[in-house]
Image (cartoon, rainbow, N blue to C red):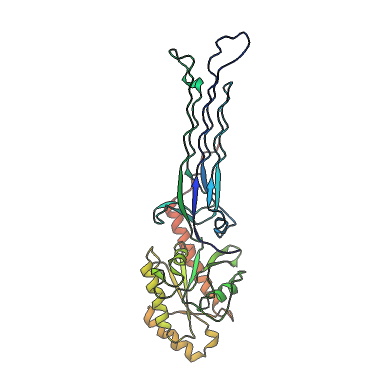
Length: 347
């Protein structure tokens, strides 16, 4: 399945149905009076977050969505049927933005979350509604009100507990495939990963979290260079960052500073997230080189990096357990902020 994380679509709610002008016609009833029914309400436009989706690809081939028009009123006081609503299904983590691409309308960050984007037009009154002591035979009815319409942007920010960040070719995809059942594209050249990937990490029966492989960052990514800010947005929802540094490259300190600089420039609290620093591809280094490079990186970062290899598996579990500790702390903090859930009164 192709990955698409943002798209622009047009939505329109249904028009209300028109009221009817009708008079009762029955044998032996000379003045039957008005019996025109009201029009039905137009359908609403809803958006709903559902499990099992991780892309907006369905909206690449259809960009216009319109709810059903309400039915017209009829004689014998029959009201028109309400128009059917239209429900846009999106992955959990999708955001709805106004046409300016900046104003946030809603953030669908929980499964089953449902938001009404547009309300359908009201149905018009039939002539029976206008009957009164002065005018007992009104010959007019109201048309239905028109529906609403607008252009909106859908933007997906993946829901993951931890995010893999690093320069292109830092070994993130290899690491993800080593710790989960994900099958990312892996090759020995930069920008192999062009879309974010998700993998589920199972440490034990009760220790599980979702890990996102974020495409490689380059200098200027926070301003749109390379794969741009679109993929930095996927890091926003993570509880912890696993920062992989390629131990076989020439300037490991420069690589660390580049990624840290982009996280700080992007904002949104990315630079303040807990970070697990890991020197990757240590299987290609001898013991002396490992120690030398680790100390060099520690001097710049202010903490000792973990040594890891996605190929041999060395140090992988230690990195994952360190990440899980941070994730668990973040979850407990969120629960404390939300407070105890009200389960309601039970007899």
